[in-house]
Image (cartoon, rainbow, N blue to C red):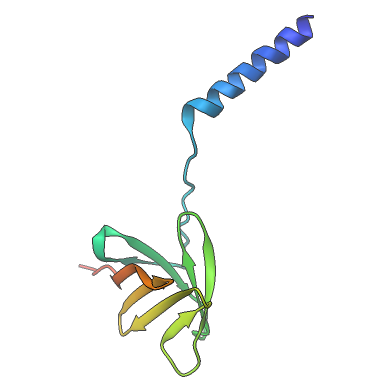
Length: 108
């Protein structure tokens, strides 16, 4: 009987922690990624592969690769497209821009 009470008490504290705090977002920053400042105060993390054949997009909930479109300055996986124009980037998911007018922060 004492063991059942002990297990029940432990379960209650676990359930209390489970319901009281909620999910937490893990940081996704990487040393080899560049943080781009975008419109609407958004930040886009991009890591370019050596040779420029692919780009990795690092978002708070996922990370994925986009391959260079031959003869273009766009990277795509068919659903998401990274458009590179000089020092500016935009990320479109489907038909809508998810991150617009992204630039590297200015170093002062």
